[in-house]
Image (cartoon, rainbow, N blue to C red):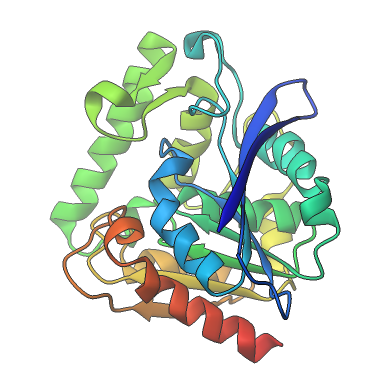
Length: 281
């Protein structure tokens, strides 16, 4: 495997970092995987997953979200970017890279929030992948939880996020153990969907829910056994909103959670993705 690290200028002038991992051999030129990490997770966390994909002959284009090491933001507290900026400014710039633009087949893959961004960007038409795959992506809505206790815990957690972000002007997730340090707009977009069970992005009038319901791009939504944040019902509810996307619950080897599958069992997750793509072909 060989890799190239670079950056591209987004629509508002911010530089978005990326890594391109190329396989050693590329006889049949399989799909290029454009990958979006989870909220607050650096791209470097997914190295083992990228190794699996390049071992299968795929080219991987990993995208670093704003505020992470390859896409630094000066003064997160003053930052006002949200989901809409990533959907309408960052991803189109990535898709304009020659490695993506000239690829014979592009699959947009996202983990957790990255999966939501993949669905929303395709629904809005800001990018046009040949297929979409989400991993451990589902609604954060309270009602998706099983049991009153879990629903109350999720509800209170959302209230804490909104209250702390409102007081400080940003979310100090690096201190509180969730999502890393994030600007208020990102957390506002996350909290709205978590509170209402639908997407409405800050200062973006586009009707994402209607667009999701009309999405025709082939899409697969994977749930992970052992996921402590997104259960199968949460995946199913969002899949229904995304024009009844195909779903698959993945059983992995060993103990994993919402994040650790990427390091402990990446092949177990990559395998069904490859099988699904083969069926599409």
